View 1 (tube, rainbow, N blue to C red):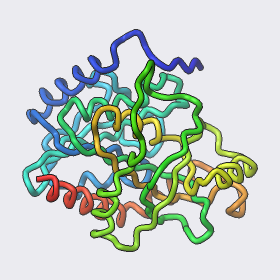
View 2: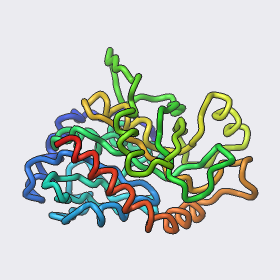
View 3: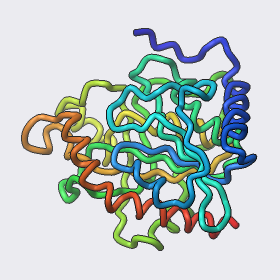
View 4: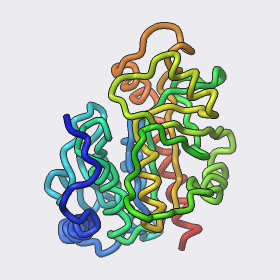
Length: 277
């Protein structure tokens, strides 16, 4: 597996072609909000509004069918109750799949090219706080990028001070005041972290640990998108919970939480749309 950072094809031109293909397939010229659905969040699209089009991801330039169990592998255009359109991306490329960072962030670049001003990034992740249990949704307040790569090249100096928008987190808490927040740490994967690595992340200030989101958030900010991040705690991290970790556990936690998380995310996205409009 070769982890090349960037392909020879211009990634921004590819994103524009993907956005054009989505517009052609859906008949929707502009999507105001985009959402990437991680484990446990995939039913949110069903609660957002009317599905205008659902497109197999591999039919859109730059996207691949997801190889990760629990991801839908489709791109959906949804008309929300206020008339705005949401682009729901169920085809996430992870860094560990070996296609390079441009592939990892292609979804957010496509969202920007499709007209979005807000990017909602969701994931399933391990929790480092003992008070969190499987099934708890947590807002991402900041991140630590431990992949040792960036989706940006050259002298591309992007301010990440308020990367995970305080404004959007406040709006999410208007919907659910009980939402806690924490710092997300992205590691490359695909293996789960060792107990020693989990202790390292905790010492660095991390509260949530996973294999996605941070690279996407950086690219989203570079593209001018305002970012909201949400993690579903699917398990306590290695060395904190009793017993081994497994992807089956992640899927089970996600499935158990979907009935609550889908409507919650839809309400948050609609609230963002109300303020935006």
